[in-house]
Length: 161
Image (cartoon, rainbow, N blue to C red; front, side, top):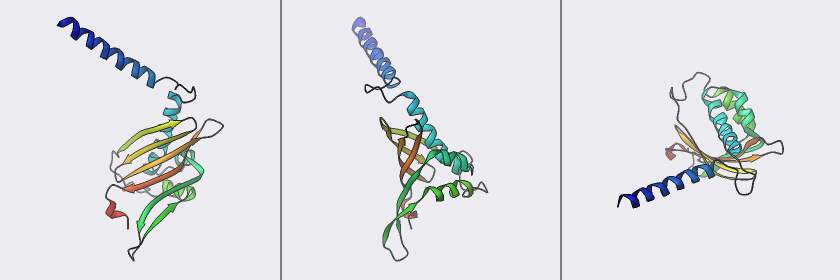
């Protein structure tokens, strides 16, 4: 009985080690690497930390010139519409929104999950204290990742008015 348990344990350990090794290697297409995943996470972190600390430079590095950030919003008359925010507005947000340091908790929540990477595009989910952002990133010819699309909502969707 003991040898079969040992065999199962050994097989499970080998499988877990192989899976972990495979996740940290270049994908089968030879294009996506650990370096890309780390760069994508850093871009998402720059995006949120720039808002926490009122820093324009990290936001500037993170955003593609053609950024489109969108959410749904309810107007005073009750009609729903899509509210869009540009790159220029996000740079102003980074610089000014939390200037007094009163918009976020002392240790703000930053939960970044890379959902998918395929060569030069990626999808990321960023959960912050009050909202969630689903981001699309693209990698330019120089190998830099930038956020080009963001779809977001408050965790408390009643705030969308």
